[in-house]
Amino acid sequence: MKFENKSIKFLEEYLNTASPTGYEHNGQKVWMEYIKPFVDKIEFDHYGTCYGIINPEAEFKVVIEAHADEISWYVNYITDEGLIYVIRNGGSDQMIAPSKVVNIHGEKGIVKGVFGWPAIHTRGVSSNEPVPKLENIFIDCGATTKKEVEDLGIFVGTMITYPDEFFELNDRYFVCRALDNRIGGFMIAEVARLLKENKKKIPFGLYITNSVQEEVGLYGADMIADTIKPNIAIITDVTHDTTTPMIEKKKEGDQKCGDGPVVFFAPSVHHVIRELIVDTAKTKEIPFQRAAASRATGTDTDAFAHSNGGVPSALISLPLRYMHTTVEMVSKEDVSNVIKLIYETLLQIKPDMKLKYH
Image (cartoon, rainbow, N blue to C red; front, side):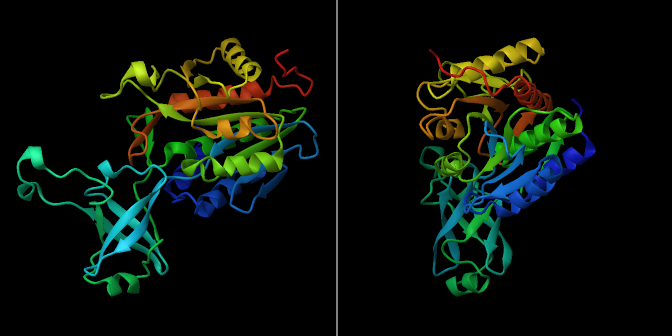
């Protein structure tokens, strides 16, 4: 499918809106505004998980879900000289921090800062060079005292994000920080748009769900699963493109951007729902890949599957390069095919389908 201009405009605005874990509300406002014309009702919970509902009166409920948060940093300590030390909010990578520009979300507005790092001339011989660690990376916001930092509205607990924005690379990839996993929010929103614009009637309640706090423990999904109490959940998240350098395929599997959605095999993935997805991909000639997770998927699939006495759940992942960096990359073709696969799978679901193994 070719993406419409309004869809790309939404994706760009959504990705460029900082939505760190625990502070997802600004991105959620953008997301809710976009899906509003495609659903019958919009709801959100106390912690900010949002969901649009099609057929809200239906007893049989199907969730399609992504997570809305992005990794970030917290101010943890301010030195007397005005330098800022940080702790993670989610899986932020200290290796990429040195020389990055940051947005510090202070009480008086955004303050620019930089992750400083000693010049190459001063670091000694290579065998003794310092390596970026949580205890030695620091942010310089141009202040010279702790009081000056606090006068800027920056205190312990202030959130810090990277400002890197959306762009397209070689007309083949979308690139941005936070594609993990706001690209998922984009894809499920597009499924809702297609159902509306193609005037498809579905015989169940569909809950298009954008959960918070995945990056720190799947907490938003855990909460919203108990609220919605779905009969089926189809989750979308990102997974590693393992064809890039320094990734061991024997450990991480063999997935590649451009080769299609990745269907996961894992204990929390329900066989009936997974096979429905695989059969749909084959019937509709949608390319797909396979991957396995030995214990947990590490995604919101686990939270939904283990909720409410067990919810039949499945995971469709999008291959992504350079996860948890500021240059995350996904194939535009893969994004299109994930949307198609979720959309076509939903059209196969019937409330009376047999979900028990025996």
